[in-house]
Every structure is written in C-alpha cells, then in structure tokens.
Image (cartoon, rainbow over the protein chains, first blue to last red):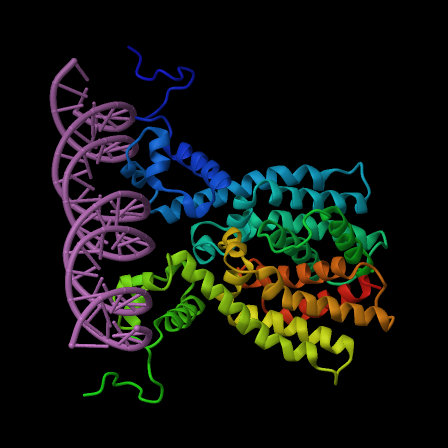
Length: 207
Length: 207
DNA sequence: CATTATATGTAAACAATGTCAACATTGCAT
DNA sequence: ATGCAATGTTGACATTGTTTACATATAATG
C-alpha cells in the first residue's frame, strides 16, 4: 500500500505532506470568502483532515498564522500588479488608469482579503515578523512613485515630491475602495462615474 | 439606609439606575480606548458592578449593543462637526479646510472609534436597526454636499454633480485617515504636508 | 539494519467568552 | 396589600484558542 494516495510525483517529506503551506493556502481561501472574523482553527484543520492542534507545529498561534496569510496575500497582489506597472506599450495616463482600476477591482472582488491586507489587523506585529516595508507592501507603492516620476518627466504633472503625490493618490483610491466595500457609499451603482471623476480630479490637481 | 449610595439627585428608576445608557457609554469608552476586538461583556458589566447576563435585559446580543454604540458614536461625531458646517464667519475654503482637519483629527484621536463608525463592522445589520442613512451618517455627508454647492455658487469649483464631488472628497480624506491610523503611511511625520497637498489637489482638481 | 533523535500529528483538558434558562428582586399599577 | 412586569443574578453550556502529555513518522547515526 502506498504511503500517500493523493500524489506520487514528489516525495512528500512528512506526515501530511506540507501542512504548513496547506494551512496558509486554505486559511487564505477561507478568509477571502468568509472573512477574517469567522475563520476558526477547528474549521480550518477539519478541512485539511488534521487535528486542531496540528497548527501549533507550524505556527505559534493563530495570529502568527494570519500574519503568514497576510504575507501570502501581498505576494499574490504584487503578482497581479507587477505586469501593469511594467507594461511599456501604454502611455503613463493609461497605466495610471489601469492601475487604479486593477486596485479597485481587487478590493471589490476580494473585500475580505483587501481589509486584511490594508486594514489595521496585526499592524504592530507585522514588522516583527518580516520586513513588510521593503518587501511586500511597498512594492506597489514604489511602482506608483515610479509612475508619477515618469509623469513628471513627461510634463503631465507638476514636479513635486513624488512620495507625497503617491500618498495622495493612494489615499484617494484606497478611500474609494474602502468606503465602497464597507457599504458607506450611497451610490454604488454609478461607481464608474465616481471613479472617473476621482481620477480626473487627481490628474488635474497634480498639475 | 439609602437605596442608592452613589447619587440622590435623581430618582433612579430601577435597580441600577439606567443600566442601558451606562452600558452604551462605558462600552463606547472601552472600545474607544482599547478597541472593538478586546471588549468583553464580562469586563464591561464588571466595571458597572452588575452581572454578565444583565446586558441581555437591554440588548438581545453583544452585536446589538455594539450597534447602539455605533449610533451613539455618530451622535457624538455630528455634535462635533455641526458647528464647523454652520459657521458663517469663515469663507468656504476655510470651512473646507476646517472640516478636513476636524475629520482627520477625530480619526487620529479616536482610531478605534473611527474604525467602528466607518469600517465594515455590522454594516448589514445597521440598516435593520435604525435609519442610519438619513439620520446619522449622512448628516456629515449632506453638510459636505451643501458646502460644495456653496463653493459652486461662488465659482470656486466647477458645477458638476455635488454628490459625486462629495464622494470624491470624502474618499480622499477617509483614505488618508485610514492609511494613517492603520499604520500604512510611511511618512507619518510630515502629515501636515500630505494633508495640505491632498486638499490642494482636491481644490485644484474640482475646478 | 537497529537505534535514537527530531519533526510532526493527536487526544484530552483548560480558560475565556457569548449566551441561555431558571430563579430572585425591585418598582409600579391596581 | 397584591400581582405583574421589568430588571438583575446564578449556574450551566457551546465554541474557540491554547497547552500538555502522548503517539507516530521521518531522518540521522552507529
């Protein structure tokens, strides 16, 4: 009888295979679809067919597991955004628009994950685990800064501190995304109109 | 011996006096200072000297209690904002600035309360309890819309749909507040610079 | 191959918390 | 005064995160 009946490709090193990665992945899926406050270690482990305590062989606490999910979420997000920023076949303004739409769409399609990544959850603890500032979060921010510098060089926007400009742009879009997914915007129907107007205000205001 | 040894001014109607109001007020204070996820019914009732189950004589669940806190929070917030909007001794632009600063300061001084009011918490359930749309939340939003209409009439900004304009302005400031209190903004030190730049972008972009 | 050690998984138990049911007490109406 | 509704209390229960002691699989070592 085979030791492992689900896959013989790789030599699965331990009991479950790689429970740690499975925990992270499944936890991310649960949080994405059901929200952070409803995820349960018991439910999580039950889906993977292990006992509840198995988590503690890979993560010292539920909090640390979530921190891993956050890290994983950023990776996926960056994977989604990188091609947009690296695309040189479109103008700066077109890329600016594409970026904004991609960001907003991600928030709409993954509201729970978006709240986890850009909310306050475990904010203090994040820096302790790994270098989020330089590694994950800032990847998108730096790309935005680069885009703004490009726009400055082309004379599309005024030459001011691009970091301040990036913060302004990010705040505007993040605010829109947050209000939207949290149900505070009265007119969710004409979102397209609001988004266009916001972007126009930004582009005109940055001149 | 007196029935109530803490106050003889008012005829306290029932066992505790008015436990319902005290629960709301203390819960708000706890949430404001310690956050929503750390508040406990046991701790709350212990501070008021009652038993844990006493809550259920006034609220059907913890969630409903929090909804009451949210309502109370909006009342306090509106109490804070109303004079700024009603002030006629300053120009429109000055009031616009004062509004933005008051909003941002509130978020900074009461981050936990701010997250509760403008986050996703119990968003679906809010409309079921009372008419937040028309009563509480929108008070500030309507005031902002009125301010923008005033600015339109004075020719300071362009005459477009003031609701869309208000959403844009709110999103910008809310985004700044959120990123700030949730620790995502790299440069919290030069907040003044970012705020000013954001407001300038808005005013210029709305022309 | 046998043994040992390390890594991983499990079961049972505990504390904290929200909630409910049964009971007790207070205030008010009649 | 009596009865009733409102309010408060105690004990119990389910859920959940977590720990401890134990079990098992893999790797290392002789």
